[in-house]
Length: 172
Image (cartoon, rainbow, N blue to C red):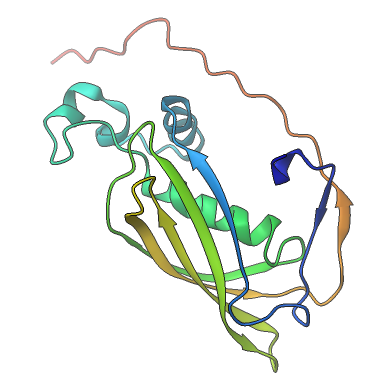
């Protein structure tokens, strides 16, 4: 059973966290993920949404948005470690390799440092593809929760993407 299928969402408080503790999730990038991220963010860079353009790019095909991977890091921090009650303060990301449709990415966060005076936690963040290659690395700083939170998961809506009915041709 996937953690997202569980009826509750829990956190890990600052006092409960230990150096080296980690959490992760795994996702496979789909064409629909790319389209939804483009619609949601407004990032319609042709490298992500235009197969003809992307075929002639340095990657020779459509690539996922780098921030899709960044959003997965945010997901781990906000839902698992530390989880609910976490305040995201800072994130650095290095994009090492593209993620393409069908790639399975494992995103992990690991507690590197705890700062008790401000209850801040520094995490090493990493995303690896199915070949074990690092696609994203970086660090995150959060303000960790001090109180336990145990909540029912809120059901999310189902999203359906409809293909456009006509193309937007620009006349010269």
